[in-house]
Length: 191
Image 1 (cartoon, rainbow, N blue to C red):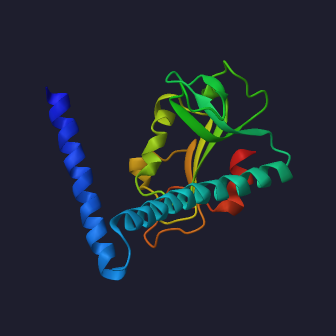
Image 2 (image 1 turned 90 degrees about the vertical axis):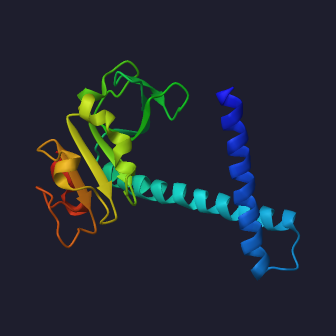
């Protein structure tokens, strides 16, 4: 019963959002049909999401190139289960989390993530850094939150420590990080 109520409520909510969207777009593009306006809207949403994904890939790609240039062994897109065990590479099905970059030798299925260093790449953080809470339970040797923005979490909330650090190219004006690291410091943190 509740399932039906919830499903109907969501359908109404979605339809209302579409109606509001169409009305707002109609003021700018009155010659377009409702269907054309929704198609334009959906295309814009798709492009936005694709761009957001591309932003994350940008940082991961550059850090990967840096590691390669410095002959540091690593793997990208490492999938772990809820126990922190590596279950594959570049797979989401069955994974509790997919880690951007894992550093170390012999990164293999069946090994614990606690044996390696980890870099989580977030072009911008907002609250998305909380996606890495697994790292407080299954602690990597070193965990680095790498970001290009100043919207990283406060040091205490992040649980910053000798083995858990934030690297940014854009520090906050009131930067409370224990370790004021930028990308020039990355090699020193890892070696």
